[in-house]
Figure 1 (cartoon, rainbow, N blue to C red):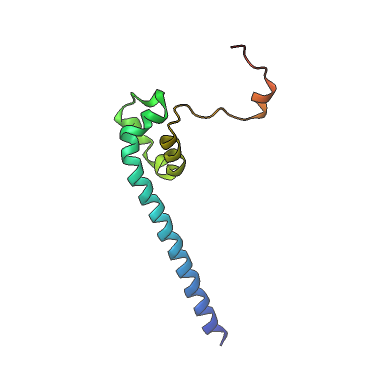
Figure 2: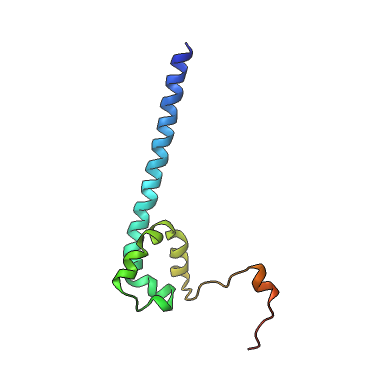
Length: 99
C-alpha cells in the first residue's frame, strides 16, 4: 500500500512542477510581448541616455526586459524618465550638494 501512495504523491508533485513551468512560460511570453515595443520605443522614454542607443544595445537588454517587465511597464506607464535615487547608507552619510 505505501508504494501506491508514493505514486500518487509523485504524480501530484509532477503536476505542481508542470504548472510552475507553465506559469513561468506564460510570464516570459508576456515579457517577450512587452520587450519588443519597449525595446523599440519605451527604452528611450524611460531612460534618456538610452534614447539614441543602437539596435545591438536593445537586443542585449531584451532578456532583462523580459524578466523585469512589470517594473519597467510601471515606469513607462507613469512616464518616469530618470531612475529613482539610491537609498543607501553611503548616500545618507554624505552631505547634500548645494543647489
